[in-house]
Length: 235
Image (cartoon, rainbow, N blue to C red; front, top):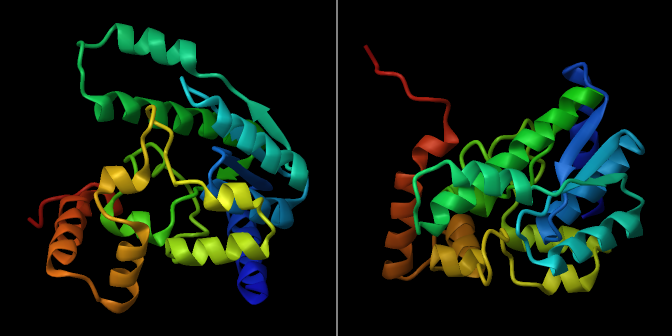
């Protein structure tokens, strides 16, 4: 883990400085992935990093956990409340009961906010997505998927947990059920319909029950457009 941490910190510095930028901005959600990314960016850029806490009708406990991480590791942060802009924007749209369609707006508002502060500070936007989520498309296109760098992009969830323990992320955050916090009671595993353990095992070894394998393959196929630049016809 020490070698991995050092390599990720060096990689972040290399990519940011190659782009002529001077630091990193990232979302602090109170979850394990954002906590790990925040600590890596702090190690890489000292004070030239910024964590944004962006509640949007969110669970207050997530904000508490985000603040706990920022304060423990000395991560500079700002709190940007997006409730009002979300309410005003959705008020002009066609009414819908589709939770996912509405929730994706929250994620995209956060992306806009991150790029605003990136532009102000000459930072790059560092995302929190991991290999497990990227593989099956469990992210919002041009939302939490709208980033410049993905330091956890080659690590499955179980590897992120190991790195979190090495970095001394609070155990409370390591143990909490992963959630995007998009609506009350929402969890990653509940929404995907499989556990991270099942997904990680399939990604790393190819082993899964027939039902789980088919579900994962379907998710991979249907989300292919998320992992590539906009498709153009081959003629």
